[in-house]
Length: 331
Ligand code: UT7
Image (cartoon, rainbow, N blue to C red; front, side, top):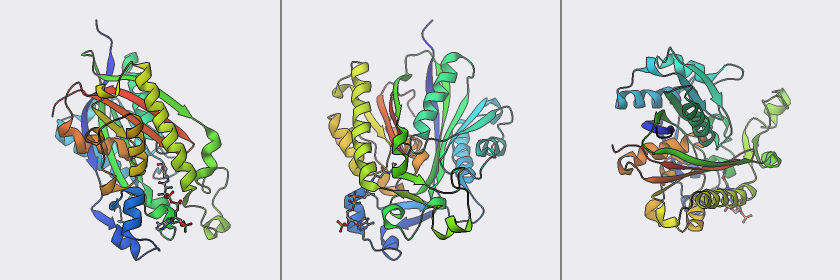
């Protein structure tokens, strides 16, 4: 019998209706459309404005979109992995809330957090469960309400991030497609360069932390940028080498959408034509755990069974990696 690999068999997405444009940001901080577009490639991002709605709302909507598109019976789902850096609340699993809300009553669920690499690591974890034979239907969701941790007076971060969610169904296949190989890394010495300092166990919330605006995401942009370019390019090179792939063998690069220039630098290192590079950062900005599944949802119609896709991500921690994947269906 052929080897069992993890296939993606369906995709869903959700982004909130509210569009925060570069023009509107010009009225909030000292910035301009030309700077944001040339430095990041972002034109607009989506924001979940309604009070009382958190990341679970985005995740549920993306899962419902997948369920509707694929006629999936949620009762068949065995595991829901919710990849997010912005859970609804501490201590209570957001994934459990999502699984119950979508009717996945026979599933267990957990949250997986590794900043912008969450979905990539989630795909690795889901694949391991599938390859071992332990579970056969896993709903993998990447969702983040980044606006909940963004300081809209800080121009270094507020222009970058947006809200959104994407979901994929992971199932076994023996047809040779699905996840082929991965190369994952992390380096904890990078955590000082991108984080939300307060609200966790190191620095719990106090009046002081609120007054000092320590519950917002802060980053040393240039340091993160340089590390992202170096490490994403490096792991892509390594995954190609490990699998004896040449650049002309690759059909798609699906790279985390943090900055258009980071994606383009990674593509250049792989010597890939721009037609093979998935890009939607102009519409959504950086949606953290949601960028990769949102790319798959937006490019679903162009993807063909057997297409060779290189996934790559880099995020806070630092955390990063790449996955070599063969696409599993024609839509
Ligand atoms: O998902 C993983 C996490 N995040 C990332 O991967 C993001 C990585 N970093 C970046 O994408 C980029 O570093 C940024 C987009 C955050 C910043 O772009 P940059 O080209 O690295 O700009 P910079 O920080 O070096 O700043 C250049 C100039 C500075 O002015 P001076 O000192 O040259 O006069 C900044 O003060 O641009 C200024 N600046 C801005 N100007 C207009 C910084 N932010 C803005 C802004 N609008 N929003």
